[in-house]
Image 1 (spheres, rainbow, N blue to C red):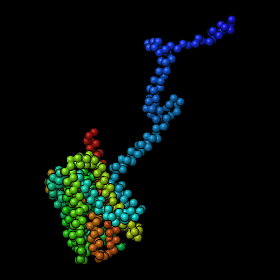
Image 2 (cartoon, rainbow, N blue to C red; image 1 turned 120 degrees about the vertical axis):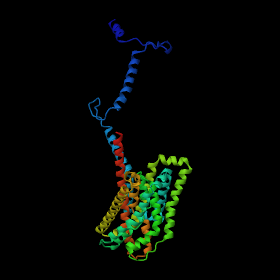
Image 3 (cartoon, rainbow, N blue to C red; image 1 turned 90 degrees about the vertical axis):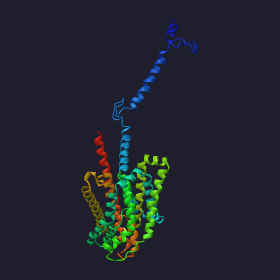
Image 4 (cartoon, helix red, strand yellow; image 1 turned 45 degrees about the vertical axis):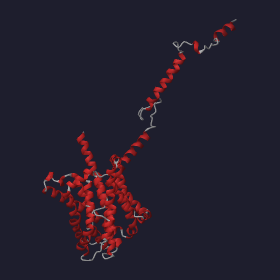
Length: 417
């Protein structure tokens, strides 16, 4: 009897399962409610924990460092990306030089296919695509600045060659080469590319580049005879140079402008992706020093390092001298022609003439040296310091343009705040 009573107390009656239709929906089970509330609390607590700061403590009192490493990596990658974007042109040029020194075979192969001419063609195609009609009008309005730039490039700056010839350096071809470099017109592409990056009057830079190189075909032989050769007859391939300049400068510029004006979608795409086209122009520009360094690497290794460093220093001083001369001249002409109301006082015009008139072109110089036939010395040694001077002026001006852009950005930020 006692066992029966104990069995009745300890053994619960079997639970009867009612069909779903007989359950009352307004009387939920306590266990079902508990399970629903438990699941809901877990779903809510998980995102809250995911949003916690990495340094906060979890339920066990331990710091959660799972995301700190990834956050630091992302910040470092972002800083590196911003640095590369802000200094894309100088990094591309330095990379081209380093690649030419490390592996010249690729650069020499590119030279056999005249890749440098295609890169110049591409730069001026981009210049035509990005050229607004309003910029052409602005260049026409700034014609006094353009004439000053042409006079400085073709008539004033060749006088620097006489100063350079007073220096004593062995081999003497280094000195003569830099003296020849002073008599050249402006660069075919880098001055325009840097002017575009500086957001200055790029149409004015284009006009000075094209006209100075076309006039230079006629003026350069006389400048060399007067300042460097001392009466030595110089034969310049006038017809070949003129044809080369027309093919690599004028035609791509006109083609780019025609594409922009003929197709509205092209103009909108270019305007919306100006940063992309600026980087493409910088890549095209970096191909030139890459090929030049690759071609001259064997001669570079033959020269004693201290002598070549002196030649590099001379090229740097030459560019600084040209830049300072043009800056002082522009400031003086601006003061004489109306001060702040003068076209010389406009920042976009002054920047364009400073960048273009202070640079000298290497391809024309190489073409002239090839026609000298060794009259002024070994052709390779004449060209070698000019390769370094050409690279120095582009790299120095690219850093200067980046400095100007950052200064303008900080000034605009200050005004907005």
